[in-house]
Length: 153
Image (cartoon, rainbow, N blue to C red):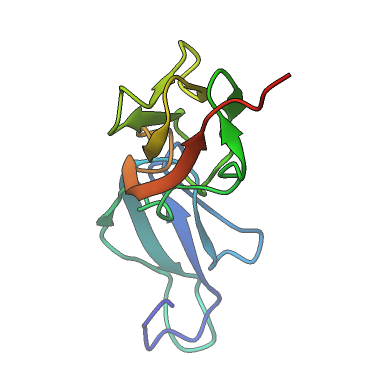
């Protein structure tokens, strides 16, 4: 909002178009990147007042905090020797991965998402998302599932 007693048309310009832009209405500001956004307010000449230009004002556009990553497809009926590929739910835009809290029971492959069932027991996994373009990184809570013996042939 441009605050002035001028009676002309009010609008804003951006001095940092890589961080923030102004919509076609001349007032709505859109964050388009990370960094320092610089905005200047203006008012055109009106019936009573001359045109005026305000000093630039700045604010920082920071990365957003993503939703907590979590595995949405924990296996039911996992058996020794089997695998599954985890699906991680988060709005973060970084790389998704897993860490194992029980490496004797289960391991994570090189892609960071495929889990191998090595031994009988509780498999403990934690989902992560690294920092991306617009979001910070985040770590989820530990999630568990049971790995059982292989079924006989």
